[in-house]
Length: 572
Image 1 (tube, one colour):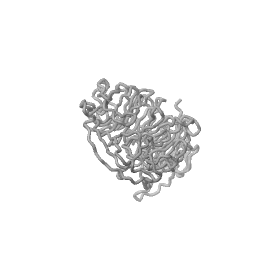
Image 2: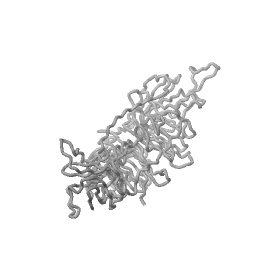
Image 3: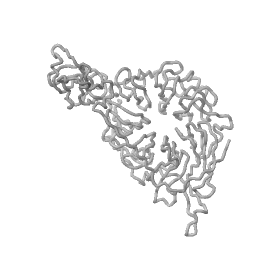
Image 4: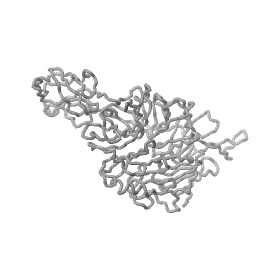
């Protein structure tokens, strides 16, 4: 099924894409706590009780569970009898009631609880709250504040990463997303960051561009969702974008600054677009020759946003999304005039190395339908080049598939996988991440059962679709997880809007063991706000083992964050 649409691209050159986001935030003194204790001690005309908890750091300033900590203030003896172990007030660390060991009129000695994270301290008496300092709980995980992007980061979400294997030093990453600024530099959707968190400069040896993403739709903000390598070192990017601007004045080819694409592009390993010279009569110059025009060598893509893209062993490209139209450009004459050829596809399509559609894979003419009764939210490619899709759909290619389905390497529904899923998920799956080393995937979403078995909001599945029953998550309260990823160290990193996990305060961030246990030593970080997209096992600023967290992160450990955080971690 094939139809032809003609469109004229504007010949105007894009010189900049400016997206300004103004966010005004006013935080109260208790914002970092993000808990249920929020009343004003003197609201409604209440009289002062003559008691105060100082905002000064305690002695010592931080501690492990079981440590004895001395906080300062005044008026404590009016409301307690330390000799009789009687206290009219309750002391909290991060919303956890904390044992009081001793008191004077100006000091309060407490013991750090066994299960607690970093957070605001407070004293509660007669339903009135007196706030103290933030107390850092120590453990095996802490924020690496020396990492280069700690204070700046990006101005918008980071979706994906790719380690640059062409730089001799390890842990240099291309970070892609929806941002227009990274580390204070203006790059649109793509930037290169070294092992220290420093951003590569424009038109540098390993980053040969000065801008990045553009869109010809002024009502749409461009972004990259996926990035991956071909065997020859070129990179595949995909997402929601219609143009890519290099603005590389040193290149001999006149690219017109912009190449036009359809949500997919191929880049050199320096992030410069892969182009082919075209010669048109309209480009006849004053020297009596034709000026070459650089156009995208990969001439294929989709009219819809690409959620995920993958590269097969034979270097073909698989694109996944709520896709209905493959698109290629046929340049008839002048480079600003193209014939846009559209072919119907069914949710997942495969393209050859030059961008041409592989019509042997899931052709609509052969009866493939794709997703029905909902939409696809996420996907991954497994070790056997099968594609697993998740979402809120009810069927796929006319076959009942409750929110999750696997396509084999030929693009057909894997009936054995479906049989192992059984009755499937009883709600929407919003995110999935796959660990190739462990051959397992972790799902999160709005579900409470898997194949009839109770398992709420997060589950791990094996390669064949069976539930990993050794992972038994505890109850979330105050909200739910929105992301989870399994790292090679066999830990599950979770983010969300929850406030407790297993009735223990864990405000929005978890590091779980593979059985679902939240070991205290790994869960000492305070309030998290946002949603993770990727977790990378990386190297910290001092060369130790770390976790690089990326996504849409506005708060971490109670402090402002900028969509990327490096954690120093010890899981040994």
